[in-house]
Length: 447
Image (cartoon, rainbow, N blue to C red; front, side, top):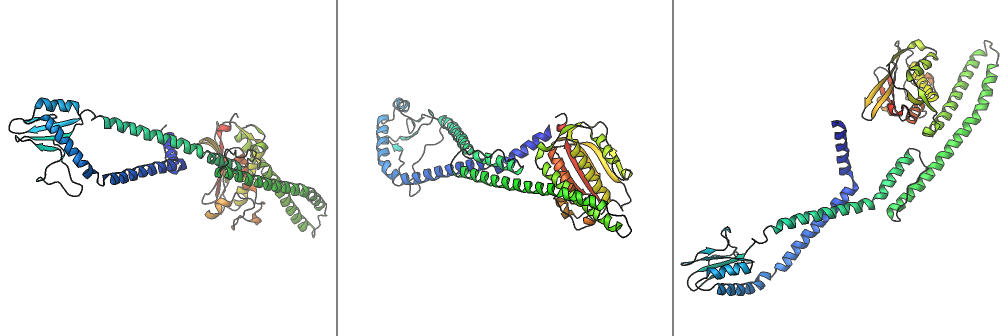
C-alpha cells in the first residue's frame, strides 16, 4: 500500500509544481498581498505627514480636561469612574495617592515626536503634574478588546482562504478548455479523430480548440488518403506478382536457367511478403477494430508456431505453467511470434547457440502481464539504433541488412500487434545478441 501512496504523492507534487492553475492563483495571491502592502504603506505615509502635529493640541486639550476631572489632589473614585466610562487607563503617583487602574500594565506609552526622539526633559503628551505634586499618566486601555485581534486574524485568514478557493475555481473554469484540448490532442495522437475538441467559449482558447480541430481534420484526411493509396497500390500489385511468380515457376529447370529462376522467385517472394506486410500494417493501424479476439493459450500457440518453422530444434523454450488464458487475436499473435522467431533465427545462424524463447508472468507497476521474450545470439546492433528498429523499413548499418533477409517490417508489425492488444514491445542488446520482449496485460483475460 505504501508504493501506490508514494506514487500518488509524487504525481500530486508534480501536478502542483507544474499546474498552470496553481501558478496563476499563487500569482494572484502574491499580487494581492503586494498591492495591499503597498497601499497600506503609502496611505500610512500620506496620513502621517503632519497628522501628529495636527492632532497633538486636540489630544493635549482632552488630556487636560480628563486630569481636571480627576481633581487635585487626585480622587481615586473619580479616576475609577473615568476608567469605567472610557477605554482609558490611569496611573497616579505622588506624595499622598499611588494608584493604577491596570496594575498588570508595565508602562504607559510616551509620545515620540515625528522628527526627533523624545527627551525626558520635555513634558509628555499624556502625562500631567497636578499642583499638589501628583503625576497622572493616561493611556489607552486594551482590556475590553484584547481578544478581538485574534478573532479578526482568524476571520481574515478565513476570508483569504475563501477568496483563494473562489479564485482557484474561477481559474479552473477559465482554463477548462485546456483540459479539453489536451484530451483531444491525446485522442488525435492515438488515431481517434471521430470526436473533435468541444468549443465551449469564443475567446482565445476557443479559437485554439477550433484551430486544433482543423489541424486534426487535415491530418485525418491526409492519413486516409495515404492509407487508401497504399492499400490500392498493394492490391493492384498482388495480381501481377502472382502472374509473374506463376510464369517464373513454369520456366524450364535447365542448368543455365535454374540459377536465374531461383533468384527471380526469391525476389518475387520478397515483393509478395512486402505487399502482405504493408496490407497488415495498415489494417493494424486501425487499432482494436481490426482484432478478432478469442480465448488463447499462449503456451499452446507457441508450440504450434515453433512446429511450423524450418528449424524447430534451433529454439530453446522455457514456458511457465499455469499462465492465464488471454483474449487475443490468434492470427495476429501467430504473426508476432513467427516474425520474432524468424528474425532471431536469421541472425543466430552462425552463433552456434540456440535461440531462446521464454514465456512467463511478470508483475509491474501497471499490473500483471504475460511476458514473451525472444533472444538471439547474433552480433546485435548499436545502442543508437535500438529506438529505430520498430520503424518501418529501418535497417541498421550492421549485419542485420537486406542480405540477411526480411523486408524491414517484421518488428514494426510486432509492435503494432502488441499495441493493438494493449501491450508494448521492448528491444535491448543482450550482449551477445538482441532481446525482444512483448508485454501483454493480464487485464485482457476474460474480456
